[in-house]
Image (tube, rainbow over all chains, first blue to last red):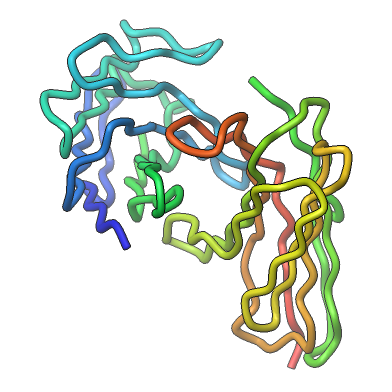
Length: 113
Length: 112
């Protein structure tokens, strides 16, 4: 199975600040995905992180608020910018590849105060 | 985004009982997946389905890919306390390499 590590696992941040979440995969994958899970809710796709090109954002999510980097085939970052309490959620990265389906990291639990 | 509706929203059952939950979509998917999420953890994949009508088992879990490709079902037989968690369905338009859209979740509580 793919091993996905996310850092930090949790954080408490002041409103107006930014937090960068890292996702490291133990082997190369073409596509990585970032999801948000608000308290008691399902997972919502934020964007697809493409290596070598800009991320593809879902409706309702914009690059200025959630800039994403994908410098190589094993690593991606998601930044939550200018945070407000409404950004308090679990943020998860996921990978999908032939033969190994749809694995998730353990998530980053973010609380904005 | 895509809307996937799961039912029931929550279930409280006695240990040993069987469980059934389903997921419906307004879109046709080529892949259906079922996940379980426990508190403080990311979702863990339980079963993946790739063809309409496919029936796949994983231990006490059985899932089916609906004929219309707009729905899927998950059954858990002889439930045990460690089955507690939130179960999510997810749909994917292609068989690999694309994003998943998640259902609203079914929260399962098993009473010993």
